[in-house]
Image (tube, rainbow, N blue to C red):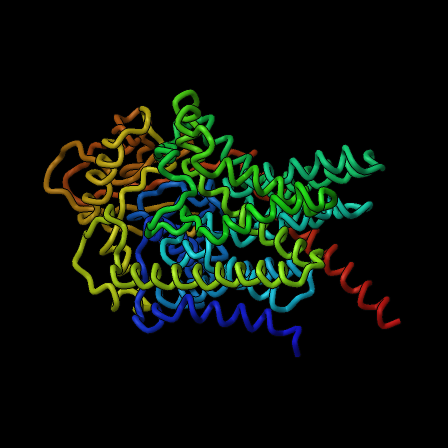
Length: 554
């Protein structure tokens, strides 16, 4: 019965984190909520109406024909679209996916800590801390995709520890986890790569049979590239042929881990946690300077320094401004910091022979767990009381947020609320604030007079009636590979705005425009290679499981 206690702990933590939201019976609109809701609404409608369009988004973002999902976790978007269809409304979708992310993260940290310490108490405390600290709760309150990176981090760190412990390295396991990470959130996967590098170097330096290990890593990399070529190849090709709008730059020093009181819990350091880090460093550097515990602690410490104000982020940003745009928040590194240190703590508590010190350290760990739970529940309650937390949300139409979140007509919420998100728009110039203002004026405020339909082949059809001949702004976005037909005439060389929104000549009476992204052959091939690779991998995994089960029965 005891072995189920950690899973019960995960369930209790899910209930604690969801309690206030379930009582309020409403959704939370955070910083990334509307952006990702649009993404998942589009894939949900594609599945529901059987009108698939991998590249061009025909249902979301005001049916403007933007490309987002193809360059931002495409498979993850389709999975969430399916969950949205099952949930039938936004409130249930937010609850279902929040339960899912806490389950994945909780099971991951349990498997990781249990590997070194079988103590039910310590495993459960680790679960509580992990599910209430850092980025993982940001999915519930803001739909930040880094939260999914946090949930996957324990599995990646397990792969890193495998490098240090196992002679025969399981390249398949690493390839699958890294592929899932890339298909979910590219930036988190890059953090994982950086995290695994020290484990790789230590294995090469300390262990024998380096050749076999290196071959295994090469196999893992090649398999990952095959599984994810639908993503990285499309992103590369679109970026080379279009001037895609990049994410906004942030002040990196202001987004580091530190001792502050903030609604952004991902950047808050708890004093008792840092006390444990100091005690852990004393232990591995003075008392026991050998083994995996030392390596994990030093790697965790390195990331903690990088993620805090101890690192010279102001100088880095000044000399390499691109980092402020592409990496944005150094506190993202906490997705690996917390699981690394939680693993190190449980190893130390398994090794300690002095019972008094062991009890003191366990009590500090318990205090950290209680503090983190209190902070998280207060934080979630703050977001629920606010409802719409993001100050950049634009109200297009007055709606009742609670009714819209519970309606099975999913479009109501997205028709009433929007946000200027220029990410991945094809621009004529560098990203500036006026670009998103242009998008608001030419797309968000310019859709009322058009009837839109989606054709079976993924073409977006616009219909409108005009009283006179004149040039107009057509509320669609054109990429280099897009084809625009207005009144049966292919339009090329037309004038476009700063965000590649075309100006076309309308005739008096009925007008019809059709927009379709004409995917180059190599992009289509890359998607097919990825899908076939996943199918083959799935079949191989099933065969292996069957053989293992048959061998046990025999």
